[in-house]
Amino acid sequence: MALYTALVDTITTYSGLSPAAFFTIAALMFVVYKTVCGMFVDPEDYDAKKPVAATTTTATLPEMPAVSEPVQMGDVTEEELRAYDGSDPKKPLLMAIKGQIYDVSRSRMFYGPGGPYAIFAGRDASRALALMSFDPQDLTGNIEGLSESELEVLQDWELKFIEKYIKVGQIVPD
Ligand code: HEM
Image (cartoon, rainbow, N blue to C red; front, side, top):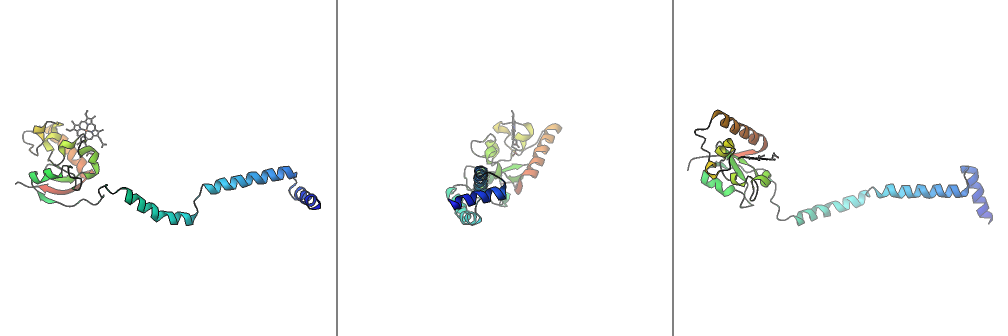
């Protein structure tokens, strides 16, 4: 009892608070400390978990095609280009404008199977793009007879492709 009285006296003398107020404030500070600590990860735990997380990610995504630098194809005939229409997920997705072939694999959602512009994949789509046409007859690199404005539209598409995609080759006659 003497110890309790001494403790209460000490608290009152040094903090100027009643024992009840002192313990309430101490308890609140402890809760705040624990809450803030809970927001951070122990550095050791973090380092220990990192490699596991990396392995798990790779292991759970085995079917994702590797995102790698586009492979240069060089000279390709129109017929050879058709094999790069996205039907084989292991092959890059290619598309040509004015005979220049671009790797459009990063836009598989546009040009891949089932995509809104899948018909352009594996083709020189110059005429279709110039005419803004989805007619299969326009799926050709032949731009003969196009008007000035249609050629301008095609030019805009070409600039967009040059900016966005990597050129990987050019179409050569069979
Ligand atoms: C109702 C008409 C159309 C609408 C609403 C439309 C809408 C769109 C949208 C929202 C995008 C995505 C743009 C981006 O995120 O960069 C796009 C891309 C594209 N559109 Fe259309 N489009 C239409 C007609 C056409 C037509 C007629 C053609 C050509 C025949 C065409 C060819 C393309 C191509 C090639 C891309 C992909 C460009 C790329 O690789 O970034 N679109 N379109």
